Amino acid sequence: MRLRVRAITYLAENVNGYELVDPQGRDLPRFSAGAHIGVRLSHFWRDYSLWNDPAERRRYCIAVLREVQGKGSRFLHDATRVGDLVEVSLPRNHFPLAEGAARYLLLAGGIGITPLMAMVAELKRRRAEFTLHYCTRSPERTAFREELDLLAAVGRVFFHYDGGDPARSLDVAALLKEPQPGTHLYYCGPSGMMEAAASASAHWPAGTVHCEYFAGPAAASPAKLADDRPFRVHLTKSGGEYEVRPGETILEVLRRAGVETRSSCELGYCSACLTRYVAGQVDHRDPILGEVARQTHLLICCSRAASDVLELDL
Image 1 (cartoon, one colour):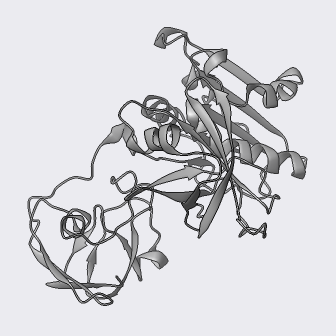
Image 2 (cartoon, helix red, strand yellow; image 1 turned 135 degrees about the vertical axis):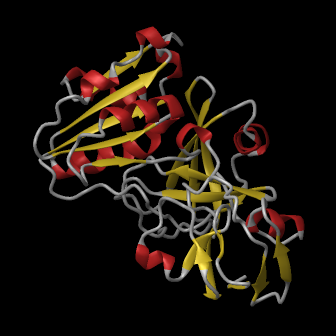
């Protein structure tokens, strides 16, 4: 769907907020806390979490950190203007907020605050017990600081500024050492924080730890296996057929052939490249799809075929 950029706001140093609305003022499809949308930027797509209240129906709000090496963020910061039309996907949620937990512990690092802002709005509406720990370098780099100040004043939000010095960062191991019964943990942030939180919460009860990766743990690509074999992908809608050799991905082959594809992390974590298949056997190599989803879909950035031909709904 095509949405209009109604407003661009300064949220923090190098962080802009983008408010997207229907050009005719109609309601947008509903989303839940933790959801994200894909945004088409020129000839590529990037995923961005929705940070506004899920109860809102007239706008989607995203926050974008300008990164030197991030062509998606540079395009939004440098080339996108109020009034522009942008193509976005329907909201998807791989980071849903559990119902009925006794309490919620939220941990954000930098721009990882975005999905947790929607969770804060939802938890406030539920009158649920929650605490947010928010780690940044400085107040100037802290998006939504003013919005969270009141919650900080009543002990629901804690800001942690490290000035770029790891020795001054939040002690994640100590924070997560003793989980309270009925507590669910949600965390999102840079790879270092994600690794620390994953390690520190490894002993928590099953099903109580939830996280959102947009670049994969330590930005590690899915492993290339020694027994990779060539196979062909057939596109049922366009009629094209292409060979995928050992060491290359379906996504790379289709992109090289000029087939329009959607991708973001390209590591098997964000699901931006989720594609339906209609025939063949899939060698799934992602860590996020459930068994039901794997019966009909695959992630073309990392998965391969276990059959000679794989037919995709493209």
